[in-house]
Length: 131
Length: 187
Image 1 (cartoon, one colour):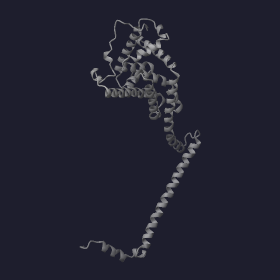
Image 2 (spheres, chains in turn cyan, blue; image 1 turned 180 degrees about the vertical axis):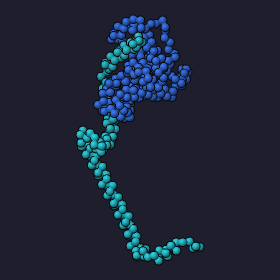
Image 3 (cartoon, chains in turn brown, green; image 1 turned 135 degrees about the vertical axis):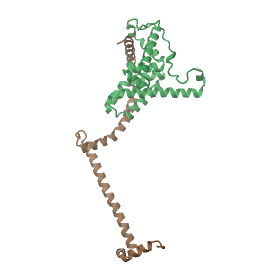
Image 4 (spheres, rainbow over the protein chains, first blue to last red; image 1 turned 120 degrees about the horizontal axis):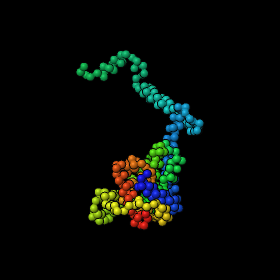
């Protein structure tokens, strides 16, 4: 170690003594600042933890530490799948109902749409007048 | 990723030195506390997913940036109220008057034993001498020797080259030695 470094180390030793003698009020305010900073981390971590829990459950990893969290994640996943299935079924039923209503409310009977002559007449009507 | 306990221990370990660093730089207790608190929050919010061994350098970068931001804001405020600073020379780099410091080569600060540094009143003299260092010299000295960063890490934290770090550290050490000797303390 060079003389310059030795001198620097001694200066730092003196500075360390200064931090030990820090005013109590300042030390308390630093502690409070640290707590506030840690709360910010606390607010950030749980959102990641749920993702981690799902991954752990699917991969069969170490789930002994957080069994409740793993169970909740699985439950949430199953609930999501069930709601999605039910919602899709509901939408399909609405669509079918609208088609049925339109057919029944029409002036034509539904059997008219199965008649080939009627289909040909419709195509002829839809074709441009010049053709 | 650092756990809450690990982050807490890390912050508890560095908070006092961080406060002193900020205080040497801004010379205002409340401002220094604000700087440390902002730096801690930034580290906890943005970088708590980083490995524990990366935290010291990250924290020092955040802290030094916060100190520089404070300088910048103070400078803007003072320019708003007075135009005197326009007559004070190099306006581009007011925080780095490194070239203005001349070390008297006749003084050999490392000539005597180091016993005098152990005296109690030495603390205030050392702190005052540190406060009076040019900002970049003080920053390099504290990061390199007090925080124990190596030269490459210090350069990364300061945003300069490794050569500049060596120069700043060497000049800071000589300036401190000369300042202590002027107060009757032979390091």
